[in-house]
Length: 208
Image 1: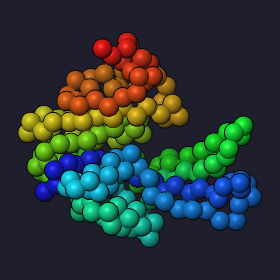
Image 2: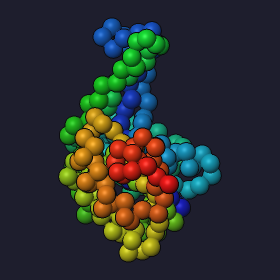
Image 3: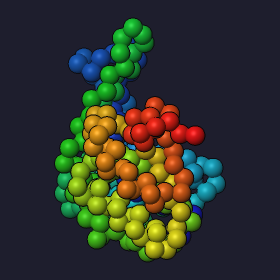
Image 4: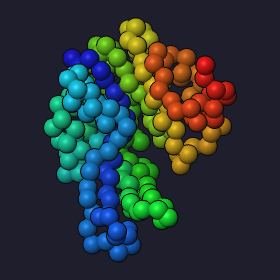
């Protein structure tokens, strides 16, 4: 069993070559991206065993995501496979100043958004030495919020410490909703990762 287990959505990142625009580029660079899977990949590269749990469609694109993450040494054996559905994606147009760096998200109704917490292998989570979560997941909808709540409960019952990266995304939810949702969840957290800006906005005060 891996030392660290994390849960969350991964998407396809499609970016245009430098100097080109989303409107006109004939080609895209395609990468796999997700806060939780990125953490798992980083830990695996550093020599720590890591596992990633998510829900993917059983399609070539879903398999592409799992294969890329597994290729970096991450245990993806507990990924849930949906018979149909879609992978979330986002499109990136890098640009030097004074042009703005442009990002367009297309992640609504992804396979992960329909995840059922009851289908997760919670024994796998309870066996970990550390559970890692982010504030992105509860922002994605009711089911993913239930997933985080269940994960925290399972970790508490088995005394598995939890690290939590707030990773606030204004495009997903407003500060007030994020504050109300995250406040009770953070009571279960042993290690909190947060920018000073997010702490001031979401934690109602600057940290000591």
